[in-house]
Length: 458
Image (cartoon, rainbow, N blue to C red; front, side, top):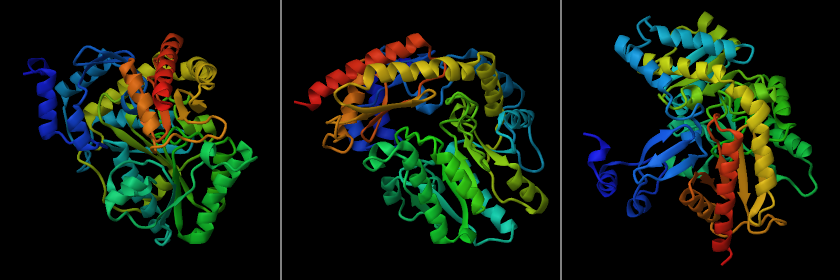
C-alpha cells in the first residue's frame, strides 16, 4: 500500500494521531495540518496537492546534488543486494566504509586522515566530545576536559549535542546538561558590534571572548573550542575575516584543540570540500554529515586529526564507543557515489567561481535595499536576510521572530521553500542551482518580502 491510496486529510489525520515531529509545537501543527511532500526532482519539491516549491534549503542543508539522482538509488540497490548490512565491531568491517574513509582522507585538510562513522551530525558531535576528552586523559591530563562553545551555536539535539550547542530553549528542556561546557559570545556583528566598531575589530573582540574563557578556566583545564565555521541553524552568521585566524592562534597558544562542526558547511557548500579550506582553518576534528550522502542515506563522519588519532591508536587501548550503524555499508556506498557526482560535475568549482558570486550579487542587488531588510549576507551557497522594522536603526518588529515567519509563509505560498530562524530568513540551496535558478529564487523572495511588509506595517 502506498500514499496514493490515501487522501491528504487521511494522511494528516494519521500523522496527527501517531507522528511526533522534530522541533515542533505539536498542538499548533495538529491544528494546522502537515504539508505532505511526496516527490522531488532536481531543485524542486512537490507536495501531495501538486504544488511545486523551489527548495531553498536543500532539504535540511543536505541535498547538495539535488533530487532524483538515479545513480545514488542504484548504488544503494547494488549494495543492498550484495550485503545490506554488517557491523564494524568484532574486528570486522565491510568494503564501502573502507573505501569511503580513504576518499575522505584524500579530500580532508592536511593533517587529518582518520574517520569515525555515525548516522547523524548529533552522533558525531557526541563522538567528538568523547574522543577529545579521552585524548587528554591519555595525555595524562584528565582534568583538561572543559569545552568552550558559543551562544546560539547548534551542534545537534542529543544530550551531548544540545549541551555543546548554545541554544537556551534547548538547554531549558534538557534539565541537566553535560558538565564542563562553557559558552561565549558569537561572532554576529549585525547585532553585537559596537557603534563605530569595524568588522575587523569586532572579529578580534569576539575571538578574545574565547581567550578570556580559557584564562578564566585555566588553560590546563580546557580541552577544546568547538565552532561552526559559519553558524548555520543559528541564522547563517558569517564571522569577520579576522575571527578564525585569531581563534586558531589562541587555541594553539594555550594548547587547546580546535573542533570544527561542518555538518552544514561540508562537501562543497562554501566553494571548497570543507569550509576550513575556504577559510584557512586547521582543525583537530571536523564533524560532517548531511551532504556526505546528499541526504539520500543517514550517515555522518567525524574526521579525526593525526595528533589525536596517533595517541588513540598507540596508547588508547579499547575506545568504548560506537554505534550499530557505524560505517553502514549501504550509506557508505551512497556517499561514494555522491562524492563522485560532486567531483564529476564540478559542483564545488561552480559554487566557488560562478553560482556563489552570482548568488551574492543577485541577493545583494535585489534584496538588500528592501524596506524590511536590514542586511543580506552570503558565503558560497549560504545566505541570510535580516528582517527589520527600521533599516536605519535595525529595530526589529515585535514578536521575537514572528515577522520572519510571515515572510516564510508568503515565500512558501509563492513556491519558495525558505526557513525562518529568529528574525532571519536563511538559504542553503542545492549546489546544482544555476544562475537561472538563483534569479527565480530572487523573484519569489522579493514578492514574499513585499507581501510580508504589507502585512507587517498594517
